[in-house]
Image 1 (tube, rainbow, N blue to C red):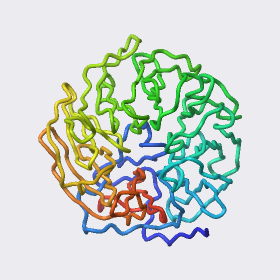
Image 2 (cartoon, one colour):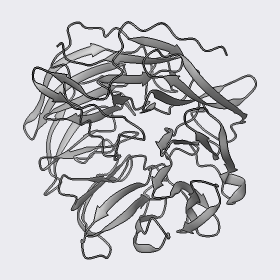
Image 3 (cartoon, one colour):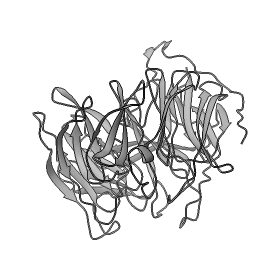
Length: 438
């Protein structure tokens, strides 16, 4: 497949802009769900409402299919996709302001025993001038970010004796200090594996049992950094430097390993929320002095439809202001009380009522930006009383066909960086300006 890029309509390639209102903040989006994996977009100078019902791209680049969302670091946008003939996965770098291809790396990759086999799932992680990728069948690569030169490569399935999950390897690599951590599900005791950033050699391994689809994240608990991991068998906290298991709590799956969402913290960093399709929603209190978190409540029901909880499929809930917001199993936007788990409200105006319907929520100031599977971007304010919809516009045409669904969808999480939206379908990567008018 030949890649192309349409020329930009507008360039926004500066990190800090000074206007009559003062200094505007601009940021990268260098890994899954933003700079600290918390789904918060911290830039200022953002548009208050859309001028039209359809957002025109600054540039469009041709790509192959995949569920992996883009990431943005410096003057580059990174993405993974798949080529069907010959069967390959690719890691791609584009110029952030023009959309032109900077470099690509392709390697043979035959998908076996993977459902929804469109393409890679995990976002590329960029740190310290390096880019780290993780393919559906467990191929791990480290690149010199600027040039695409391969620094090292590992086959995690072969090296750590694991078998692919039902939907493949989904979890974006996590950089912590001088190691990069992969959610593998290997043997023995290699559910999480840390590799040396420089060499790719194993530094530590931890936890038994299978992997889930939930990406690990680095959090601060008391006076120490902790890798928070939600695996197929455990909710665990680990020392990022050594892999020492600081605590672990058994996690029982009702029907199958089906948790895709990240573990989410509230603004205080003291409450932890888990949500999954079959097992509903649970809230824990983290102990700053150490030890396993205390379960405060767990809400579920007879099944994912007859329930008052939030049963997410492939999105991570938003927790703020004492409430939990998430897309429930049939596409409803639902709100729960963080204190009790009680359902506060449902909203069915966001998108049609469809099984597995999803959307991604990102917070910017007091507004929530919602990218729906129908390719619409919604600016809203969420509270315990409901959703106030401020503005809505089309940003991409979905073309991912899912069995059991009548219309194509887009399920990849977009990136928000440099006052732009970067989003992908199975054929295009788009950049859309979200900057306020000067």
